Length: 242
Image (cartoon, rainbow, N blue to C red):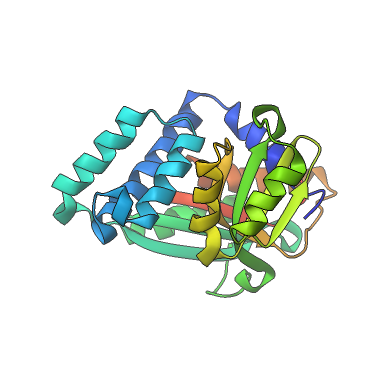
């Protein structure tokens, strides 16, 4: 894990403009709607909803916005018809890209995702063509500046609650879990008042690809920017070593 913490990327993302904040709130709003439809509006009885709320708080979504989203989804459950789809494909120089979407119009989303790949010189592949190069894991990032605990104490809480791995980066701690242990570990950290900068189940590349040509870097950024601008796109995973 060392040397490939997402923290630098997260800091970069957090410094983006208000439009980016609006995008992440849209993403989380859809996740709240789906979680409420699947498991009800009470977080105490809905672990998926608890995880989404934690993600919302890590992204500084106001509590009243979270509450409004839950109430709206609970009162409007019949009209929540988002469908989850995952696309896999290749960017420049064989980089692997996975795109998770949540949409009310599959045709529109499929067209937009293909368009993003094409404009960056990549192409959408078949299901499974790149996902075998990633491991699905729970990942929790803790900013050292925000955390009062020392590394050993934090590591013991994480490992005792079921974490697989703990690593210390230059400016953050990274905790990795199996997907099924993620909620338990996150809740243990929450109970210990550990501030989490990011907490989600994600796809972690097994190997990383470097792009040496400026043209390839521009093309890869083009793909990622177009996907980032699409409200139907929930998450993008790739193995480009930025």
